[in-house]
Image 1: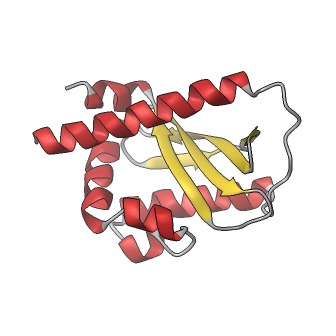
Image 2: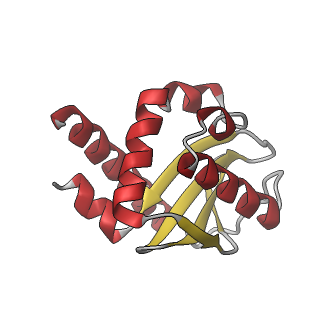
Length: 147
């Protein structure tokens, strides 16, 4: 349990640091990635449904090699448990907000779950279509990581 809490804490800290950096860059004009808002929203919903359905294969096909190394089946299971316990099942996702971070298009996708709203951050290299970063943020997830 302690190892899981450490991983979750590291995950939340990483998401917080990225959020802080992005706030500092929010005045930049966003550059387009290779994906439209509709494609990003659909990709986000597909990932969240794969998590709910415990389908690791459906969760990973668009991920970069680096992200695949980070999201092993063990981490996938831990994330599924964490999301299920804190947020419940997915209800819907809305249009993303696009931000820039150096060479990356960072999409913050607001999603409604049964128990709370969750912001899902999807990171793509500008001009690319592989998922390079995936982060979740909500009050329940932050509280869960502090337990």
